[in-house]
Image (cartoon, rainbow, N blue to C red; front, side, top):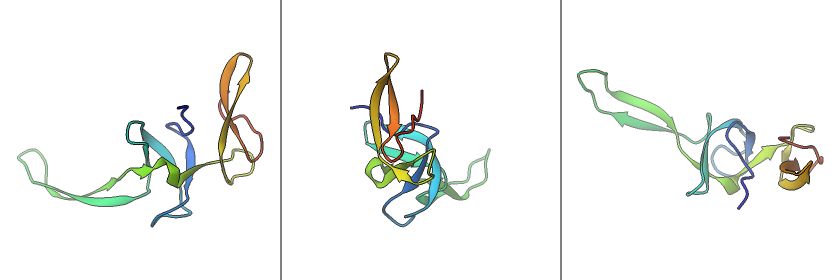
Length: 104
């Protein structure tokens, strides 16, 4: 299946506790169909103290399912679906909302 959301894309959250928030994708987990978005779905993990580092509560971004995020249209700055077209013999992503080429 083609990758519709890639690392570095700006996305908007469609469902969950962070609905409506925007952020940049920092990691894509293709086998789990999840993405990690900067500042979204933040949880606290507890780190044990060691000789080298202090322990405590550490904030961490948890993965969000790819169906719960949508790419931001580069032209209109609204959520959009992603399509594909072949341009100059190369497959490129296209915003369905405006028809704008995303990468290419």
